[in-house]
Length: 197
Image (cartoon, rainbow, N blue to C red; front, side, top):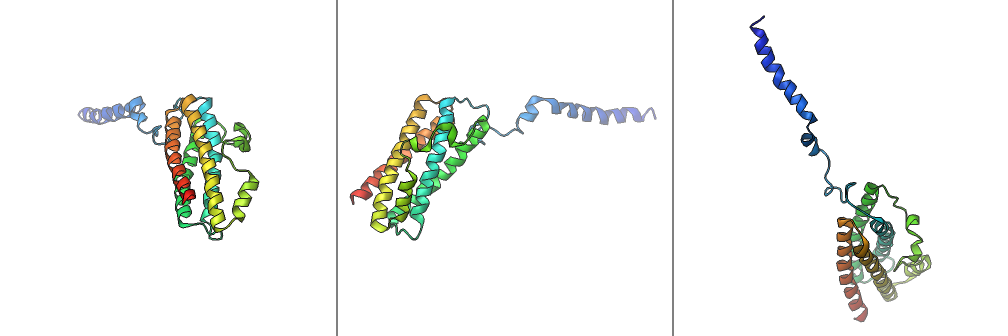
């Protein structure tokens, strides 16, 4: 029995040391998802401008996606150029909505538009009546209305994004604002060219 004790101790001590090692903060840090993996995480610095940017840009993007979906409907007879642009707008802005929603959740802030003020007061937002008129338009008239409305909508988004760049604190939100400005300025140029043709 005495000869077995050293052998048993040799097995138990390393196991005990390994178990204690789980309390090391460095060993548990890698199990937590990084802020980069989740967009702006809870540790990301943010201020009221960042929150307002996300709260307002979400419904603003949602209306752009709605307008894109109208253009993609077979009944309106949109041109191939408008359909192509609408497809790109929908593919770009839908994921951005999800991203900004995740930021607000991580920041512990409400995602509803009421916290950001009336949607109709946001730059570039169409009224319900204007959206209904767009739904009723067909072919060349639809293309013209859609392009004019989307240009105004994009211009409003650019104003909101520039405000975020001036007053925001979140690096992720400021970066997204820059992406929105660059993408939507390019699309405005494209839409103006389509109107001119």
